[in-house]
Image (cartoon, rainbow, N blue to C red; front, side):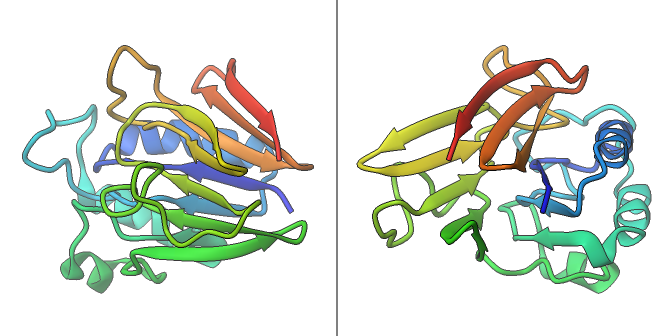
Length: 180
């Protein structure tokens, strides 16, 4: 199973389309979205080609491949237009006998983790900065933001395949990677 992981689209049709071109090219099985899908929020500038309507229309075409969680800029009205579940604060998948928790990051993150067992992994967004941290035997992974990177980071996404988590920019250059 090959997972394509994005966060913080914030309504940018431009960056979503760029990311989905890579998703298709990489032949990924699942698209994990770590929240903040449609709206930019009050603290962010409008991203390039800001169009929440176009973003939900595009995402709905991938509804059977998407695993999504709610971000702090997502609301109940978003669930009315999105054709896949998106209102959970976190989700969990099992990958090669390891629990991987998916969350946005505004509630749970490396500084305030979910109740993890040793060896569990948490993937979150929210901070718009790619990161890989190992804290007390748990991996904390952040793919960054495809639309609104912060702290001089790049527009980025992640791929999880063959026990390797790789963060790349939208030109597909590796930024960070680790083996699970």
